[in-house]
Image 1: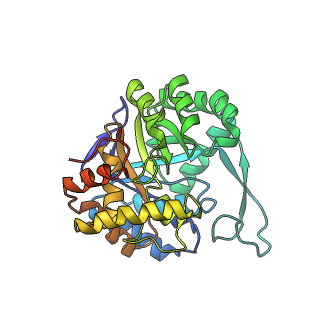
Image 2 (image 1 turned 120 degrees about the vertical axis):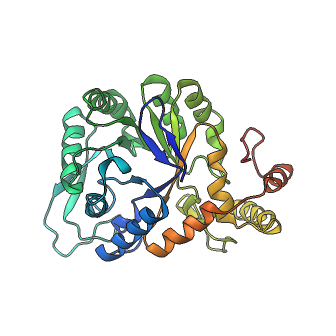
Length: 327
């Protein structure tokens, strides 16, 4: 699988990365055996970029990644995790975590301070059982952006200068805030959720041009926009960015699906290929919860998409004129 370098660093990622949210029990529980099977299938397929976070299953995702990756040669893969939430132990009392299907053994405390960032990194390394993290992101800082930029970013830059991490950036949904970070800080990469997909092109306005100007890489996450692009034909109850899809979004997604079908391509295949055509996009990240999902996504990722498909999508006004098209 092809790899690309992040910014001006020596850190490289495979063009398809494994997103760790589902292995933390996002939407439904996953047992350790199933998580191991999914990660092993990803490794066997050639994926060498793995992204996780303390938030995902209040540590479960990190632990499960570590259980598999500890047995691999450390120089053969790239691992990223995130800071911004410190996990504090608490009594379970029969409760399930509000965001993930895991016992509520910890609570999350927002903390982008220097001490909070360093504590989070130490805790992550303990859960992972590894000696280093390759990429470190400020996580979900939309409601704490001032603190993340003022305190969190310098803490990440310090860790990078110490050689504790190889590349730094932020993982967020808000393209405008990521643009501010790119312009005002010295980051290597941004992880953009839902902002550059076959259905959503808002980051072409400012973020992607700013990244090109500053030499910052982009990793496109949530490329299926919460599921509407994850099947060959979006169902009536499809979700778009964590909410029921509007009639207009559903109509547009189905028209894209029609064009794909006419070219013998599925909607997920086109959705995975589209972001990678932009020169600042180093890779895409797809959340996966089982070996079956991994194999299905690998097949979509490797599918050949004829150039005429992109021309037809653009001809119908379904792809922004500014978006680079895959060859």
